[in-house]
Amino acid sequence: MKRINRFFWWCAGANIEVLEKCPTDHAKYFGVGGTIVFTALMASFAGGYAFFTAFKSVIPSLFFGAFWGLLIFNLDRYIVSTIGKGDGTQKITVEEWKLAAPRLLMAILLGFVISTPLELKIFETEIQTVVERLKIDKAVELQNRDTTFVSNLNNLKERRTSIDNDINKLTYDKTSLSENAGKFFENSIAEQKVDLKNKQSVLEVWQRKVNSSYSSYVQAKNDSLSNSIINKRLGELRANQSERNKVREEVQTIQDKIEDLNNNKGNAIIDEKNRINDLLASKQQEKINLNEQIASKQKTLDKKNIGYENKTENYDGFAAHLEAMSILTSEKSAVFWAKWLITLLFIFIEVAPVLFKLMAESGPYDDMMDRLKHESFVSEKQKISDINDSINTSIKISTEKNQNRLDAEIAGNKALLNKIALAQAEIAELAVEKWKEEEINKLNGGVNHIINSNGLEKNETSEKSKSNG
Image 1 (cartoon, rainbow, N blue to C red):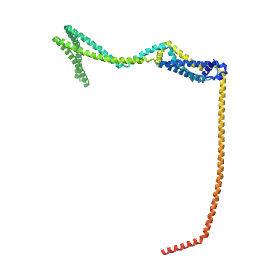
Image 2: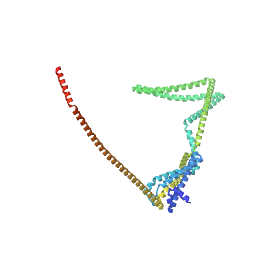
Image 3: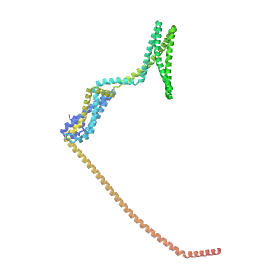
Image 4: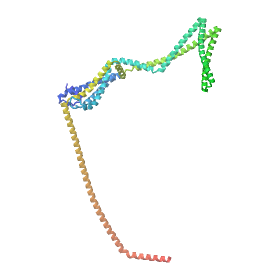
């Protein structure tokens, strides 16, 4: 039991040696540490399930779950151990809220992260039902993306249906013509007369339009209206005449056909049989071509649908479960409230240690920790001061040594300079005395000679100048 207590104290970020001396605070830090441990265990379960949902592998899921639990444990331990004791009273002041706000936000975020995978596990059966529905919806969505391809295929099928109707009608006409040619002939004439009557009605309408536009055109010319109005009415007249002439030609064609049927019944029946046979052959060949195209496109579409189904079959990961959970909560209010109650529970578990430390009264452990912190602070400050004094003393001694060395060098240099000056003076004096003696000797030995030689040279020079002049 002692080991368990020490472990939970350590999880709460407490100093175990100090806490052992404070029995009244044992239970408080035991509870804080237990909350952190069990929160980490729940985080391990949640992380392992989330990883298993994504990768469908047990061993990596166990490893990841353990890693995730340790990560959450370390964060919770850090949050609790750095929150301090607050002001030491059971009230949480505004300043305490401000100081704890970053840690509370981190704890709330961790509550969301831990609760989500566990909610997915709790509602796994209901979620799986929605996931299967999502697979079908995703497959249909992928299939609907081939709108052009499917549209072309549907158009081919509609064309084939239309050709089947034409073939059935032509086959029926061919049978009727073979079994009762006279009746078929009469029916053909009756159909042509109906068409003739309709066309004649249309012709009468266009003829009235021609007459009306002609009257308008003649009236515009008689009234001498502007050329633009006259040309406009002339254009309307010609357009109506053109349409009337087309209908008139159609009426004449039908009349010619009726006359031909009346005059050449046998040939008309043979021609009709040949026409029906030609149309049947053409329609049947077109149907064969359409069947080949439809079969090819249908085979391609089936392959695509199988590929879409294979892709959506794997739509069973963590994101799919989250999407299914969102749909489930939007459809069922009971699940919505249950989900949020679980989320709020985990958020409360995460923020509880921080709030409890802020609301807890200051105890002997806190007083001893304050004393130890103060002693450590003062001791370190004293060490810093001693180091500064030592450094200042060393700097002062070094400065004095350098100054003494400089003074000694200056004094030595000064004496040497004095000796050099005296020596230079003595040397200069001796040089002057020696020069003086040498000059005196020169004067004593050769002054008359210098004078005589200088006078003779001057006389010779004067005589030469005179002779030249």
